[in-house]
Amino acid sequence: MASEQQVRQYLAYWFQLGKGVVIRGDREVLLPRSVIQGNRYSPEFEACWQRITANNAGDCYLDGTQQTITELLSPFWEINPCARCSMPVPFRSPGLPSEPECPCADVPDWPNSEMPQPRSPVDTQNQLSLIRDRLRKSSSVEQ
Ligand SMILES: [Zn+2]
Image 1 (cartoon, protein in one colour):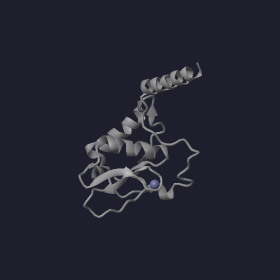
Image 2: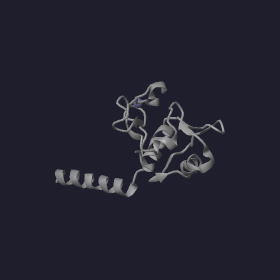
Image 3: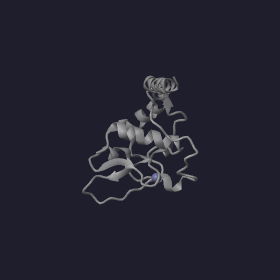
Image 4: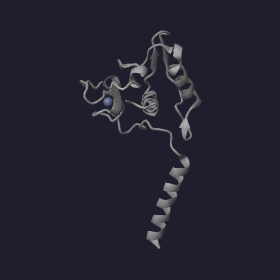
């Protein structure tokens, strides 16, 4: 079963590649322009998430996929990296017939290592201390 955190990450990664969430009832596609803000998800992303998980949202699914967000949160699905591009994709939970469907198939020029890769919110404080440690290490080598 995919956790809420995994489903949020799944959407965040695909939003960053320009794939939106279709709200079937509304015939509307949600695609926040900004997904990450500093070390957290952006308010725009959070607003989308609220709409997707609202009781009256109906069936919502990532553009190009069959599984609704509600299904992903059920015990029948897991989110694992695509074998081709490592993007998070829904897989049937072990023991169930599997049929991985990564929407990367119709993203042009993907996978592409020259493009900025989708990411999760970064803990800036942690990143800074990693950089600081690295600098310390390299300066002590020079002495
Ligand atoms: Zn893929």
